[in-house]
Length: 343
Ligand code: WQD
Image (cartoon, rainbow, N blue to C red; front, top):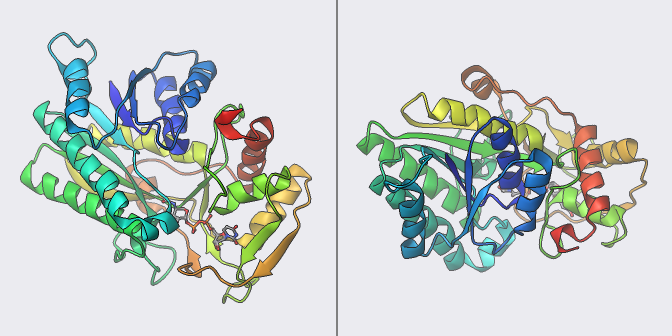
């Protein structure tokens, strides 16, 4: 059995679909603070398979311990052998305003989780890290050996967790951890049944584009048109959420057959500007997208895209879906679910 924390979320729910379709049994642990349990109903609809669910806040060590006792105890049938950890607060701007909540939720939460794993001798851990650990990249494509620096408390919590995993792997030679550094996840499952469900006004580009395209949000503002790039707008490595989810299946296979803590980029290796995303969106959906170019957003790097060689060679994984699939699938989810899971 695979325990998936934050399995009701955007990346989590897409990964649970792939796990079930690979024949894995899955337990989702989620406090539902930033996700809807409806996503699991949709996962069941897509796969026709059952998912175990426990609503638990990782900060509640006692309640979390009871869940592990229930699923790892002597009476438990299919025991947990791997944890895939998504559950964390993830809004960069919010983390700057509320650092303590971010350190408490993201860092205390993962420490409680790792103590439970230690108690039950669970040795395999796949961690949802982020390209944000690279700070403002010195050069692109970014290799996994590039320096790390936190641009926000959110980024700091990702670096701290990576370091905790590296230290555990040094102390326990049987411990196995795969750290997945996501670039920019976008898109949705082809069914349009699961997708990104941001609270309030989305900070990220694609959910803002699709919200504006259905008339739910004011026209898009492009943050900065004077960067030293081909068209003056920032370059990012957008990756389809289904490719990203499949990257977790590759990581699951790897984490079960290796020891130590190893980081991998999950990106396409292809950088696209904001204007190129807008053009791809209009082309793939037929929806025109008015926008205005305004001043730069503080903290944005000019460009950020992945070197994908290590993941291709060691995980035998490579993203395959293109930017038009990303735009069309994200839009289809948005049209079918104008208010996310709150419909
Ligand atoms: C992409 C580009 C914006 C909104 C963030 C997090 C990162 C990771 C992925 C968690 C930038 C521009 C955006 C808008 C715009 N999340 N933009 N108008 O900042 O690359 O990465 O999400 O791990 O940690 O930092 O993604 O989608 O916010 O921005 O012009 O309304 O789109 O300036 O150039 P980002 P983003």
